[in-house]
Amino acid sequence: MVIPRLDRRGSSTRGCLFSLLVFVAALYYGVNIGEPFYRYYQYRDAMRSAARFAPTLSDDVLGRRILAKADELNLPPAAHRLQIRRLDAPRRVVISAEYEERVELPFFNHTFVFRPRAEEPL
Image (tube, rainbow, N blue to C red; front, top):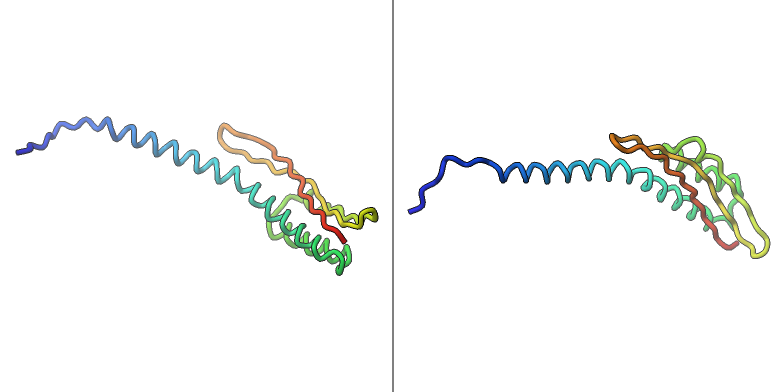
């Protein structure tokens, strides 16, 4: 017969709590650091999509579509300074921008510089 012991110290739960704390901290930092990168990839995708339509649309229309996406993503004002260039040799369109996003977390402050760019043949 097994007799239950009532004098458990609980030392094993401390290790579990520490592991849980490390996991939650990693998740918190990962989400807050990953968010600017997620917005960057969405913005770059909007640029690539607009560049595919460049042969049939004017630069003004392309710019409006991309800027609408920048507004939707709440990107900083520097992201609204687009460069749309149509090159002749070889015929292609190049859309680019540059902006910074600052992430401020406990024990971590960093400014990320993003340079989204899209290039498609005309």
